[in-house]
Amino acid sequence: MFFASFDMLNAACAFSMEACLAGEYVRHRHGADAYLGLLWRTPATCMLGRNQIAERELDFDRLAASRIALVRRPSGGGTIYTDPGCVQYSFLQPFRLGDDRDRARGRMLRPLLAALQNLQLPVETCGRNDLEACGHKVAGFAEYVSDGVLCTHCSILMDADLTALGGVLRPDPDKYRSKALPSVRARVANLLDIAAERGVLIARGRFFDELAEALRAQLECDPELQPLREVQLQPGDHACIEQQAGLVWGSDEWTRGRTPPFDFEHSRRFPAGRLTVQACVRQGRIAEIALRGDFLSLRPTEELEAALRGVDWSVAAVMGAVEAFAAGDVTPWLGGLGAGELVDVLFGKDRDDATDAA
Image (cartoon, rainbow, N blue to C red; front, side, top):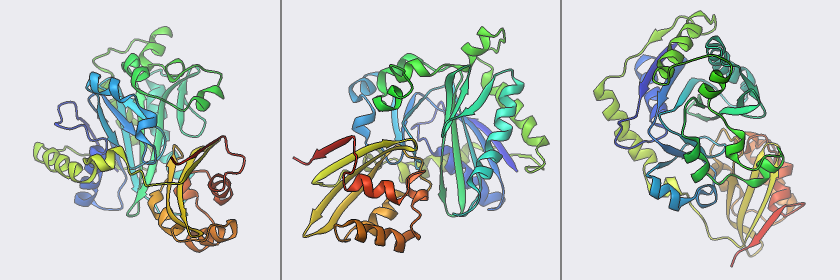
C-alpha cells in the first residue's frame, strides 16, 4: 500500500478532488492494483455532493462575503464544510460493481478508527455514513467508483470554524427534525474540544501531524495492507495535478450543476437519503429527467438518467427500462434506494414535496 500526506492550504484553487487526482497520479506511477491512502487539508471550502442542487444547500450571500471556496466532488452524499481545522482522508482501492462494499469500506475505516482511538479520541461509526464521538457527529464519508477504482473520502472535524459551518450550510430540515435537533450546528463538534473535555490535550497546531503518524502506524501493521510505502509528492506533481483538477472540476457548470427544463418536481426523504426527481414529459414520453439528492451514489446518475429519457410515461415502462439498464438494481446510482423508491418519487406516490414548473 502507498500512503501520502500533504496540505493544500496554499493552493491557488481549493479543488476538492485534487487529492483524488493525486491518488490517480500516484497509482498510474506505482501500479493500478495498489491501495492508496491520502491525508490532506484544504483552505475554507464548501464541498457539494455530486447530485445536490447547489442553491438549496448553501447561503450564497454569506459564502461570497466569507470568501469560502465552493467545489463539487464526484461522490454522492451531502454538502460539507472544511477548513484548515479539518482533516481529509481519501482511500483508493481496486473495485468492481458487485464487490463487497462493506468489506471495502472496512478496509478504509479500520486503520483510521484505530488511529483516532489510539489518540484517545472515542470515534465510532454511526448511521449510513457518519462518525461520532460522545454523541456528536465529527466526520462523514462518501465514495464513488471510476475506472475500476473505489475512492472513499472522509472529512474529520478536528478544530474547524463551526460558526462558519453553521452560517453557510442549509441542510435539509427533515434530516435534523428526525434527530430532534434544531440545526446542523447543534449536531456537530470538534474532536479537539471533545478530547479536552475528557482531559486529553492535543496541540492545535499538531493534530494533523499526530493523526498522520498514528494512521501511518496502523497502516503499517494491518496485514491486508502491508507493506506500506511512503509517497512524497514533489512541487511539479502538485502543479500538474492542480492544472488537471481545474480542467475536470473547475467549471461553473460542474460546480453549480445542470438544471434542465422540467414540468414537475417530486421529492421524498428516505432513510438512505433524499431523492428529488425533476422531469419533463412530452407526448407521453420522458423528454428530460434529473435525479438529485444526498443519497450515497457510487456511479454517476447521468448514466441512469440517459436510460430513462425517451421511455414511455408509465410505471411499467420505467420499470422495464430499469430492468434493461441494470437488471433492476439501481443502488450503485441511487445509494441505498431501489427501483421501487425511484418509481414512487417519479410518479409522486406518498411524496412529501411536489412542485409544478412555472
